[in-house]
Length: 404
Image 1: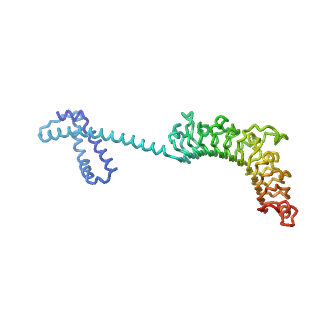
Image 2: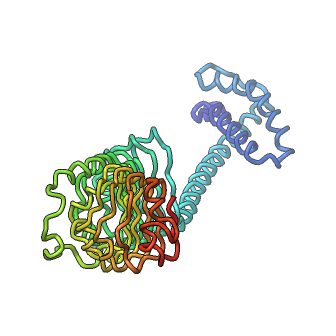
């Protein structure tokens, strides 16, 4: 009778599974020092027990004539039953622990405020709902994951509290991330080396980014349109650099500035970049809307003026009432400053770097407090010598002057 039950219960497999499970728990609990010796003895005896059980389970005839052996087999039957119960309990415990760990992790995830995903060059897929799980996430930085695809992804949900988003070479997911809805708390957006983005979102998407005050766009080689950027009503800082196709589009806009540019009706929202900072690496971008119609920028930086022979005078005059700072870098082709500089009545800081062709200064606005020109022509240095230079009267009342 006991042999029949043992054969039907596959006792050897159950016992082996139990011993294996016990070994795993002992490895995880080294403090249970006394049990290790017992387990080793059981593992030593197990092959002998399995030899009998295997024969029984295989259908071999086994006659029990020893009363002690028969008693042992009945005890083994009870042990096998108990072992099955124990294994079931252990499996339940493991499942419960897994669920608890998952819930604990989700609680931690929900409290996560900053997430950085960087240099995952082989990753090809992330679930679309991943980022939406982090309900408290305020900063998301994604960098150098170029193989990511849109497989099984139609829309990406981002937490509405997200304040700083950096998309840096994120494969085919750049556009879905950029067009994510309800980024009502977004303050700073960085788009860096985004090869998939050909246009910024339309006005209806940008209009939802009501708190966005800073936008940096760098080395997005396929970008050719500003989309509906004029709908960013809170934008106060715009930095554009290394967007080659955008420059190609801008260079097709001729003539550079029509004569009525200052008088035409401004179609851009009045608050776009109002009293804001604009930094671009090519002056031709000022020909594109909405930059073309700006009239209240307080700071303009041309970060690469190497191909600029003269400043965009008409655009500067459009912003004369608000423009406080003008910085021209790498001005190796700039031949002179415009005579209309005196009309920039709010200008406080003027900086020109690598101005090796400029040989004289025009009259400057009385509001100017800081003038820095470096790597300039020797003739300009001579004309700006204190008290004796021909241009000294033009700069004598400026608080800080450095011409080198």
